[in-house]
Image (cartoon, rainbow, N blue to C red; front, top):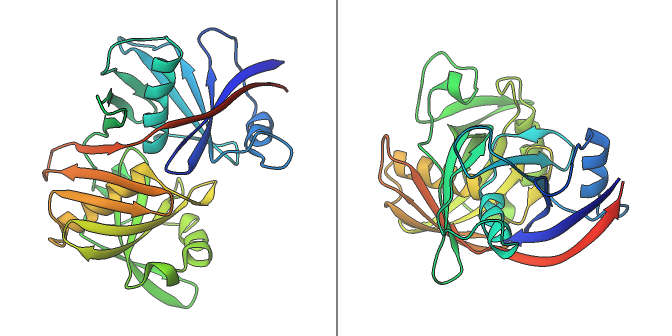
Length: 275
C-alpha cells in the first residue's frame, strides 16, 4: 500500500497527516508505529487521519499516538488539521466543524495565519475523565511508589493530570510522568503536565503525553494547565503558555464555558511511503 502524506508541526509537536478522503486508508497498529518511528519510518508524535464526517460536520478527525493507540483529542493536531484542509483545497471556509472521538470541535483559520480552536468545555467529574475518585475535587493525592503527589485532574476531551512545580527545568517529566501516565486510578491512562506559574497571565509547561512521552508542546495539555490554574484562582482568563516548542494563547472564562486555544501550524514537507 502506498500512502501520500504531509509532515506538519505545531510548536514542534509533529504529525504525519494522511488524507483518508481521496485515498483509501486502513492502518494497523503496526503500520501506525512504523509511520511514527523516527529511524525506520517518517517520524512523528501522532498520526492524523482526515476522513469524511459521519454526521453533519465538515470532517472527521482521527488521532493515533506513536504507540499505535487511537486517542480522543489533540489540540496542536487540530490546528494542523485546519491548515492541511485549506492548503490542499479540500475546504475554503475559515471556520470548520470537525468530529473527534470526544465530540465536535470548531477550529478557525485566522487572518494572520494562526489557528484558533474551540476546544470545548472542560470536564471535572471523575467518571467523565475517567479517573477513580469518590468525589470531584480541585486536586487529588496520588500514591506514586513510596510517596504521595498532588495533581489536578481534568478532561479536555482526553484525560490530563496537572502538577504545579517551582522550576520547570527540574520537573521530573520523564521519570514521574511515566508512572502517573499508567497509574491505576486512570483507566485510560493520562497525559501529565508540569506547570510553573510565572505570573497570572504567563506560565511555562512541559507535558508527558500518553503513548508518546515528553513532546515539545501539547495543545490540550496547555488548555488543561490553564483551566487548573484558573480553577484554583492562580491565573487570569487569558494566559500565554510557553512550551519548549513555542507559545500558545489560552482563554477560559470559567465554568460551563469552552476553552479557546490560538497558535501556529506549519507544513514541513510532503511525500509518499510504501507500507
